[in-house]
Amino acid sequence: MLSPKSAATVSATLPAVGAAIGEITPLFYEKLFAARPELLRDLFNRGNQAVGSQQQALAGAIAAFAGHLLAHPDTRPDLLLTRIAHKHASLGVREDQYPIVHEHLFAALAEVLGDVATDEVVAAWDEVYWLMAHALIAIERRLCAAAGAADGTVWRTYRVAGRVQETADVATFFLRPVDGAPVPPHRPGQYVSVQVQLPDGARQIRQYSLSGQADGGLRISVKRVAAGPDGTPAGAVSGHLHDRVHGGETLRVSAPFGDVVLDDGPGPVLLASAGIGCTPMIGMLAHLAADASPRRVIAAHADRSPDSHALRTELVQLTGKLTGATAELWYEEGAAPDAAAPGPAPAVTVHGGRMDLTRLDIPAGTTAHLCGPVSFMKAVRAQLLASGVRPADIHHEVFGPDLGL
Ligand SMILES: Cc1cc2nc3c(=O)[nH]c(=O)nc-3n(C[C@H](O)[C@H](O)[C@H](O)COP(=O)(O)OP(=O)(O)OC[C@H]3O[C@@H](n4cnc5c(N)ncnc54)[C@H](O)[C@@H]3O)c2cc1C
Ligand code: HEM
Image (cartoon, rainbow, N blue to C red; front, side, top):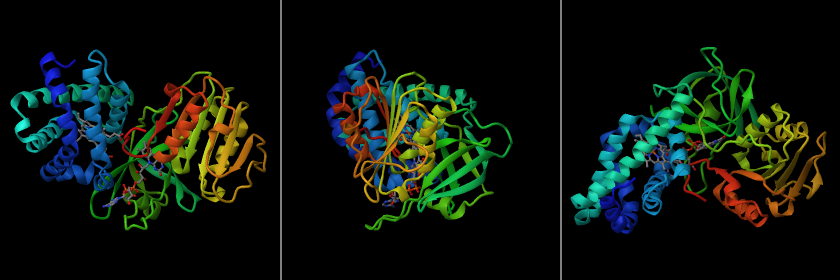
């Protein structure tokens, strides 16, 4: 809880800090990476730094945390903290790195705020930082211990035991621990972080959702991020995996983390994905199928065309195994509108155009999981709310820094 003196100062300066935070965070990263270049090379995502999305995420999180402390002094914003802590744990962020971030963040804050940054103001924001940092450290410690990495060593070496080209730009990689020990337990919807050594010597880390467990190993499916027509470069890690990892290589892979997971309850579930957002949904469907779950399940997916829809066959097969499941597929091109898909699973309906969940009969009490581009998730969330799904029952996973929907 924030002390009353600091609460008054934070409340008085939140607008000024909020207005300046867009200037403070880039300066903070500039100072941090000047002093500790290895953090940019080996820990932070260089792509996110280039486009600024991580900077917005950090700034947004601190402002949201401060706002929460003022509005609800006796509670903690658990959803916000947990999501960051899972990401930190999967990256192997260490407790002794919090003072380093603090040093450079507060140097940037003092420089940008100038005269506003009196000793009293700095002390009050210092309290906010450490309340947040200690809360994150405590959750990260618990998560690592639960993942069998109490000493913070979340990384293990896996061999790429196989690779399957799913579509023109999506490949699945089968990962088996080289030590022969069992793969760590994970919950459906979780992800792992994967390290790769790039040709320029940088070690870059990205997250990939587990699309299931296969043959004593883990499975991830990776979409190649192509160079943009506006000159943006091709994705560094996805490109590396597609071009250089064909099977037999080793990769450092973290223990599974992630807070957007399928609940074990008996209620109806709706899984709505677009594009490569299908991966956590396939993990969830596989889990339900392995349990022969009688739950009512709607697996909704949108893609450009049947050919670009990765893991399509698996989605149809898993749906066919579940007595209470139907699949609803939307394709912008190449779909006969509203046709039942050919093949053994009559519970599959194909629609033309963009996903429109308001056309479906969504059972009362449905829990929804969304994954895909942010614009897709915003649209689908609005459709679900219009169909009577409670806001608290809608969960989403963002394949990048979560700036909120
Ligand atoms: C929880 C989670 C789960 C995920 N699950 C999956 C999954 O199952 N499958 C999957 O394929 N992906 C998944 N992702 C996304 C994945 O982690 C990577 O973000 C993705 O593979 C792109 O990484 P990259 O290194 O190839 O691209 P990056 O090199 O990081 O580039 C990303 C974007 O930034 C742009 N960019 C990079 N550098 C610059 C620059 N200098 N100037 C301008 N623009 C630039 C690039 O053009 C590109 O558009 C997940 C992400 C998260 C957070
Ligand atoms: C109170 C202090 C901190 C706050 C508020 C904070 C906040 C955040 C937030 C909001 C994200 C984005 C989460 C998401 O993906 O949705 C993030 C990611 C990250 N954080 Fe922190 N963080 C803190 C401390 C640290 C420290 C000490 C380190 C280690 C040096 C660190 C390293 C990272 C890295 C590497 C990422 C992922 C970056 C990326 O993928 O672009 N953070 N943090």
